[in-house]
Length: 154
Image (tube, rainbow, N blue to C red; front, side, top):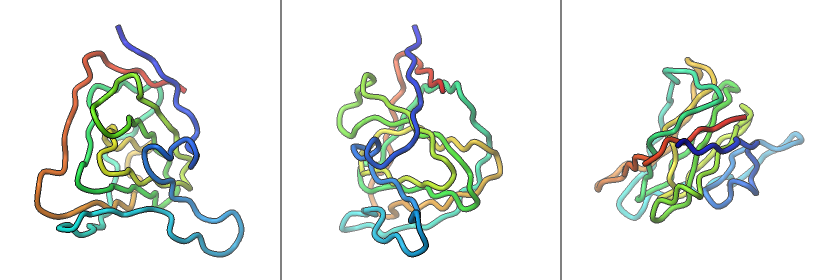
């Protein structure tokens, strides 16, 4: 039997257990220190551009989650592209703690180290996203296959 959760709008307060929301200021000016980019003592930040290969739409089916225990991972739209975020808290994987969010195209996210998350889900194929993640020694990606698929609706 498939479990269903509803995707909610991405807000800093709702996403705080999983990481940071990266968003510009509401008025002209700067928004500083928006995310804790963590790479550990033996890592360094890697900055990439990710072009979405596929588009995603609700409802989504989630069968696998991943986490990066040694560093944070951030995604920021470069051209206003929206995306979906499916997460669970760091630690032992808890399928009952899964949550889903919709980023509005002006928001990015930064996962805390160890936060379980689905692979990247852009609304539009071809959209570009700035990605910042840890480069360094050690295994920094774990996978968890869900016993029962999760359905994410709008």
